[in-house]
Length: 513
Image 1 (spheres, rainbow, N blue to C red):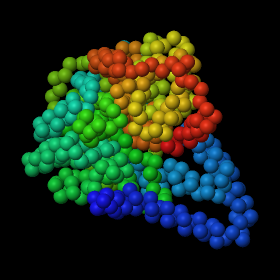
Image 2 (image 1 turned 180 degrees about the vertical axis):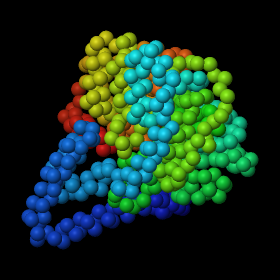
Image 3 (image 1 turned 90 degrees about the vertical axis):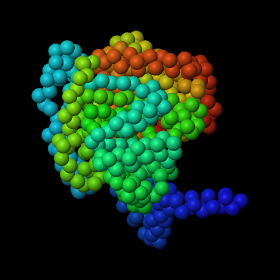
Image 4 (image 1 turned 30 degrees about the vertical axis):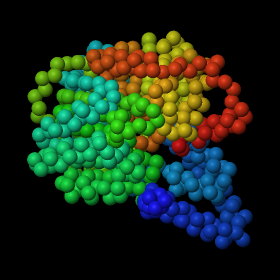
């Protein structure tokens, strides 16, 4: 009993409880002020209704995704007073003047490192114009370069990823950059941390970026100060504070490791024990990653340093982290790591996916933990299936978020009717985010098929063309299919009125989840 009380008292003192409590108090104060002026309610209501109308016009004419617009228009129109208030507090994704200036400076800095006379681009243009067009988009809107002379190794599960990452960190000679959405105390992180401490003692520069909201339940408060005492430079993205105008929706969902500028990792794997099978959550946790060795690592180095500049407001000399390593890697296709920002009004991650779907002739294989689609993605997948492309999607058999999984299932019907094949991973939860197309193209990274990843989060991925690793990724997909059950339209069954209504409501508000 004492242990139970102690645990709950600790939770009450945790900021995951305190921050929402303080925010709730602020909201209550606003509500009290509203009701205090109840005698002026009619005038107040008319003013709010007019403001709501103006706000709806603003939302309709904004560059936001249509689904996101509808999800906010409904509460604003139904509840002119409180819907408007909620939108001001949580829906507005615009940067303030100072943040815009910071982003502008970082944009021009990144632009300086974009090679507009890339020889590899010209080579690709003559080899495959379709591939070139995809790369041109990624290069222009992600400010990244396409490379050859880069070895790519597919890491089919968390244990292999952990082993390779730890081995590479141990061999670091100059610097180690880590940027992760979730870091959790346990076997995986504790082992990595011990090596990082040793590397600091050796005089090697170690930097870490972690997302504060992603780590709110997995790391102690002010964990950055603990790391700083160990000599590890640390930056915390978007601290979770009791400010009603904080951009809680915008998170750093990227997973990046850069070692000495010539080796990099990305994928779906965070630094937590469930990713390596040491902690069982939602059955077997299936995930993957990719390791790059060679010239393309530079893109990830710039991604990390640009995020560091934004958080710490520093002006790094990126060039001093450009590796002079002599690459012996033979040409194995074309590789372009890319990033996606929610603050540039360009949905790079979704456009990369849509371009791959549009170019498919034979098959499209997809794995995603969440299937929360907008109209563009539904149309693209359905059209591909209708023109004879074998479209297959693997989703989790055991979900980590039940409400989001309800939304995922709500999209099964329309996709199946249009010829898309859907499979659920029976062993547990699948957290991979991959597209494989026609044995020619693939992309692997951090970008889920949901509104958050596609529109609200900082994300990253690696686009591949004509690389041997594509066949390895495809092989892992087909192996995973053997551990899945196919969802058939005839087996979906009819929902009762309550569950049908619930799914319709969830789909309407899916962009806000």
